[in-house]
Length: 338
Image (tube, rainbow, N blue to C red; front, side):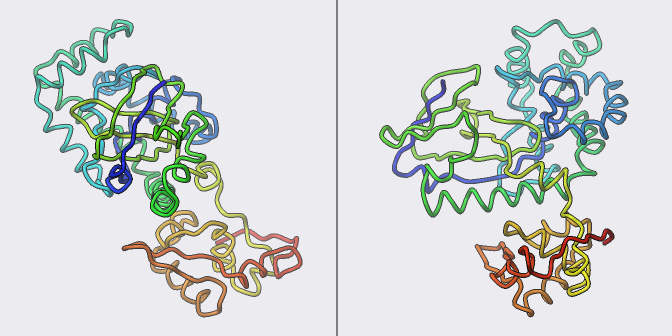
């Protein structure tokens, strides 16, 4: 059991961010069978041919070897992001800036208790240029496995951040941690976050530094509580199977005739508030076209928008809800197409 003690200033200091490199590592975990694919099965099936080619590279195999379900994984190959919207380029620069001595220390700790690597992997992990070899392997894996899916995945992660950050700011720790994971509990009487089912244990104090929340696509629950790194909690993003593996349903024929098929699909996709970018990714549509259709829906009173900081979220209005409800314009006949 891990216990994270929070104090009066920790809520204000906590922040939310996306970590592209975490997706690289955890995607490898799914593809090598370390993590059950679950609702990621269709993605794993699509990615296996590409993955087989990647594993011809000893440096990619070294990354896969360092991964483990539980226990320490070298921090420098999956650093917490240094800003909320860190790009893959910025995260790779973090990796490449790792001092060689620190990298060797972390890899030695990571390898403890793991089976011996094959000779080519061992050569990578003992090479003077290990940091650059692993950084290049991370970039190669990102380009092959994650980049083609990133617009949709980024939309999912963004939507989770908006939801979770809003709950923390408005309602506090209990609301932010509710439904994060069955293995996370908020103990209000003790001011402690409990994390169960992780290999490590201990009690940690945030001491005013707050907690970095990082939603992920390919993994469940993890924590990074090392002395030299930000206190970080990784968790599965909400609604993943609905938003990624399933596109919005085809618009019912009557609704499609009334609004047009694309606007009808947008209205159906707004079962939860979303940004223009998120909706465009889900419908595989252009950003400009999506914005134009949303403007028409807003002018018709079917959707509305709210601004939180620099983020604009679209919501269905009660009229929009009524239009797609049973007995509204959405009838039983369905049509496909964009």
